[in-house]
Image 1 (cartoon, rainbow over the protein chains, first blue to last red):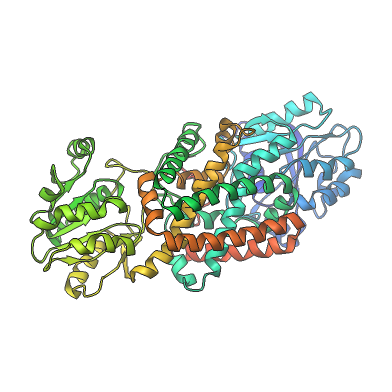
Image 2: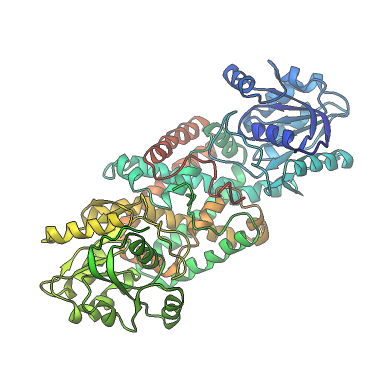
Length: 309
Length: 309
């Protein structure tokens, strides 16, 4: 029995992939909006959305979906944010809030902010939740439960509008923190962007290696590589845009990563077992912290649900 | 109701960590042995084993556990294999089989083979299964179910003894393949060893970064980094020994990894979005193959069981 507690009269979701579709089901679960309109650039996606009841009303343009909405959430790849913002700007209602779910924030703010008319609030956000699946069928209402959603107010963001958006995300199940854009982009470069690039790289190496056939890599994908392939199966367009738009922080963290990797490589080459053991012992503590912080379970699934095996 | 179908009269497990304890529970589940003896170097581990009923008889020396056994499985870190083999050699029964579960094979064969007396079969093996947990309490009977176990016969391995060991691993739930040691070590360098080193490195980088506090790394450990921390929480002694003993293959794969990573890094720096998109698209296919091969599920858990969230 969902509690009916609308935060916004009408919410418009622009882009209907994993995040937007999960938002829709979570909005419905908690009764957070009177009506939810939706738009996706692809006609096939709009047809799927209509078929599965994703959004109360699927519109044929972003402007149609956004017109009259109290909250417009841009759920498109980072590289598409500017064009969508330009398209919806003329129809935005005075007093409305525009937000987004992009994985980088400084570049997204630079792309969207210039299009926002006076009298409209622009409050960027980023839910730290996802799976390796994408598209309108991949969403589920529980995606944000007990995950963090970061709100990144811009200079002069209206406090009441920020508080309302916070309440909305809490209603979707998330814990909410505020953070500035530059710090957000660095934190995400460490915890998400660089790990994704590394996973993509490792899977690419395996794919290239001729002596180890594809079928062997797949067949013997023990824990370790299997987790990498899961990460590396994420949406290519989204991730291309992330790296192009969080270039500085990603390159900085990559530089540190390479430096550390060379130190470990040297320890292997020289047979420095103490260095390796100390390093591997230290990394265990971070894992323990994550479990204690409730961001993962202690169950020994190692990337594979025991129940599903 | 376990089916009672003993393959060996007595099995001795030397070393009582994750693999050996899982083997014990799986042996009991299928009734694969008349009696299982066990030994661990640490007195605390032996006490725990006695407390939780791990092994029918916990012995106070490796030799005592191995004496009279039909199958002796060395489940100690790779670096400890030689000393244990030397210790048990004098008490091995004629016609017995000695095997191991080490993650590298060429170095383990070099460490164990010289100690094996005439009339005893030495047949190395490696179950591709694990979790990030270790110790005698971490085992469970289902660990090997539908996983691969690789048997690596040495020159002149007795065909009947190999067939018997294969039947034993199949009884533990595993699928079995045979492979030569050198190829094994390369395949594992790609699918397991290098991914683990990379995960350790990335977690180490996060730990070092002062501007992103530990608590933020932990708090915002979205999918990606969280999977890395799981991998990097594995047993430090075991992994130190893996890298020291599969040096050549790991360094070769690391070299290829660095080369690829630099190419992607350059694409980010120069803003080559097409290169990034093509690369990320290609890696999706491998993931699809792994799901089709049944080595993982398609459930959107992204390293976290949905049920456990």
